Amino acid sequence: MSIKQHKILFLLFIVCTFPPVFAQNQKKIQVPDSHVVIDADEFSGYDSFGFSYLIKNNVFRKIKGSETFEYKNVSLGKITKTDILNPLKIVLFYEDFNSVVLLDNQLNKVTEINFSQNNVPIVVTAIGMSTQNQLWIYNTLNQQIGLFDYLKNDYKTVSTPLTENIKFYQTDFNTFYWIDEKNNWFSCDIFGKTTSLGKIPDYDKILILSSKQYLFTKDNLLFFKDIHNDGSETVSEIAVAEKSLNKFYYKDQILSIFTAKEITNYKIVIP
Image (tube, rainbow, N blue to C red; front, top):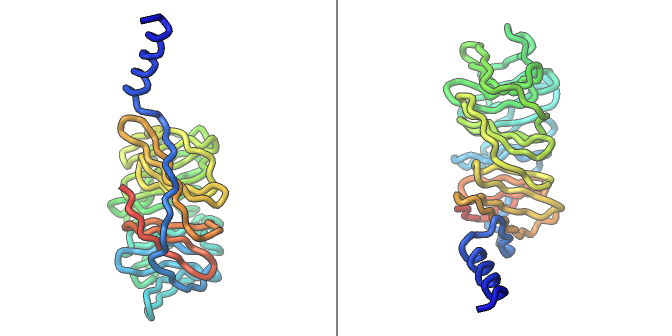
């Protein structure tokens, strides 16, 4: 066998032995499961009880069929962010007034917190529900992630100072995820352990599903990215009928695409 043939066999062995680092799957075409007509400016998501959460004219609404609950607070300005992770303790963030309101399941106000009046100075630009009566907090004064106990009015930092500004963030009970302005992706747990999760491709909107999976849009196309345990990555395009993908939401195997007039739901199983 010649030296050239040996080289060819060696290259074939490498290709067959090691999986590709990145793979682009074929387009997955989806068929709508249902349509819901709405009148809203923003769609916050839905809970396991079948209620949808919407914002219209800065009024927060919870709707299912003929049932409607509303909450508004004109004194705090515009609602910056909502967190419905715990439908029994909903979080409304009013960034302009450095304040947060906690609501019960009928949208009655339980607690209103003005962080400017806290014993420890806090300027909040990111917030979310955590565990054990705590809220995730990103304090721009020290550029650190912390936890705020809203029953004890107690605040503690858990992370070291961030070196880059936060471009996007998302929280669950145990984890604060964020993407910085260089598209680096990180997580911080309630004990302060910070983990680098890799680099995010350019995106317009993004929804983190776990430390290894996320949905994102780019140029009005929707993609699902899966990072496998062996380090390889798969990106799949999810083809939907909507031409504008300004807002989408995924929960319990239902992908919801929100427009100003309706919500279209797709049944999608993500492993």
